[in-house]
Length: 116
Image 1: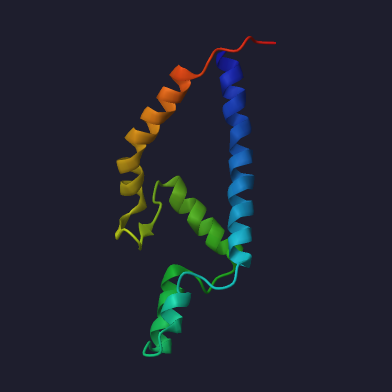
Image 2: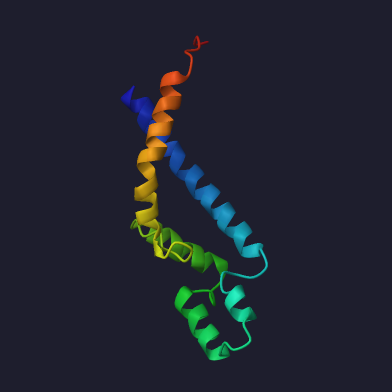
């Protein structure tokens, strides 16, 4: 049983890599970036926009941005939420208990099915 679980976890890693790479590549194909609303303001200095793009790595190709993002995720640094003005890890920690409770209730209430 332990070997089965280990195999499943090892098979999960390439799948996670492929899914994150695909989503990141698709997001890079979308027009604009998260600085687009800032660029739309008339009184913003173009030098400030260039500095922000450089500090966020938006001046790099998408594969370099992905490598930076993946490195940060592996260090459990999920970035900063501009909407909530807190680190994303803090948002995940706040919402994880309710998510786990819901998951456990679903698991408990799921009827047992015969195995084939």
